[in-house]
Amino acid sequence: MKNRRASLCLASLLLMLLPLLNACTYTQAVSQTNIPADRKKVVQASVEKFIVLGFNFDNDFALQLTDKLKGACPGGEVRGVTTHDTRTLYFLAFFMKREVSAQGYCTTHRKSQASIEPEWSELASYREEIKR
Amino acid sequence: MKKMLLLLSGLLFTGGCKTVESISISQIPPAAARKQKIVSSASDFVFFAIPFGNSFVARAREALEQQCPQGQIEGILAKHQNTNYFLGFAGNQGVIMEGYCLNGKKG
Image 1 (cartoon, rainbow over the protein chains, first blue to last red):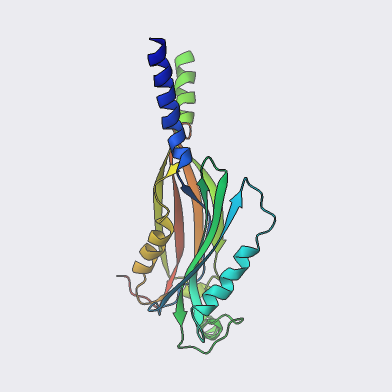
Image 2 (cartoon, each protein chain N blue to C red):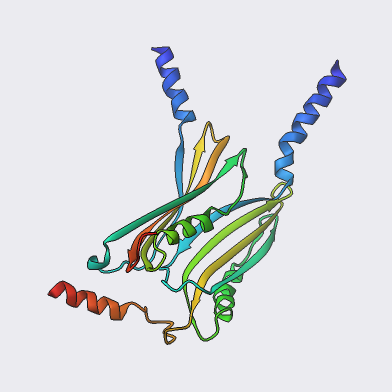
């Protein structure tokens, strides 16, 4: 009787631990920029970092994401960017993976104006419309 | 009275508690262009802290794009939130996106 109870306890404990031993991915943050009408060419990039026992001394891995995304669309603009920041926990959360993925659309029909928002000409025409 | 309190506290624990995790807003178009508002949402189930998928972000974006197949979508608010039901044993993680469709036909 005692042995049966002990094995039942052990089995339920294992059942409870099972999810913790697997990798669970949680979304931490989501962001979305303006989506263009031209959505033919999809580009994506991701960066990741493994963290052991929660010790993490920098987050520089995220900085490479922009370069990777730019590299996927040479000579064009990347618009409609969705960023998805996730955290994956392994083996009782002793190991963790932080991953940031970005997906957008590479548009090449405009001149590259990385620092200038592309809708300024449209904005001006709307303003004229309002004045009328 | 005791039963009433018990019922109320039960409702409190079984109800869905929402927590905002992150929010982003993209550039908002001028007032004249804010004619067609579009909204989409998607979520994935979470049971005992085990998330069943993380594709909800892509699904929400696709649903938003389908509502504005030929136009630009601007002024996008993306709200990522978690909902917990029944003492947090079950829940979902989801995202709500809303924005304005410019020069687009609803399809």
